[in-house]
Length: 221
Image (cartoon, rainbow, N blue to C red; front, top):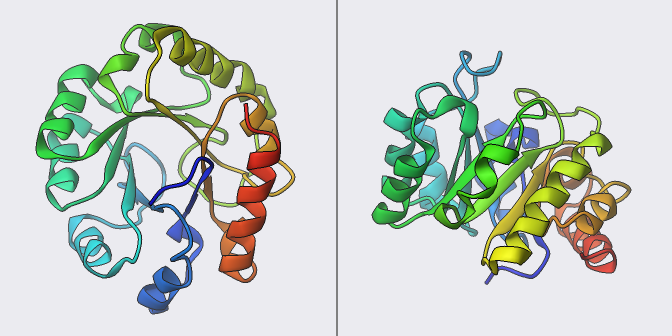
């Protein structure tokens, strides 16, 4: 059961040799954030469908798949077919974001759209009813451990305002540099779903998740 301030640990910061144990360690989280990178859309390579399928099979919490890949129109539906709870693709990698989101929803997953820091939010504001989640990247996608970009908060507020105006049940997610010190900044700007990697796996995950959730709740929009 997801909470009002959703904490989605990124397994990019987990020990991949002991991945099942690392998944068990975050069972108090809302979802597990699975970063799929193809070394084309971003300059890094992580995992593909076979590993995601195994994660889906053993994870105690649902999968929040973040596709940092080219040609999302072709590949994204396959991750929904694997059983992921949520599939987020990048606006910059989709030829037809609305058609792709509808396909993901038809399969049975939540459809999310992600925007790089340099991507203008304006073209997507009127399309928001087509999505279940918007991911505002607070770092450049492709690597973990980067510093939080506070200058992305005006973009996040634009989405929060549009969400309120349209009365949507839309999750607003942030990913990059989220810690107990920065999560409140994002929550005040309207975020309700938070990806955290080293901030969770850098200590006792259950404790870190609780601390992050409490900090977000204190500053909730």
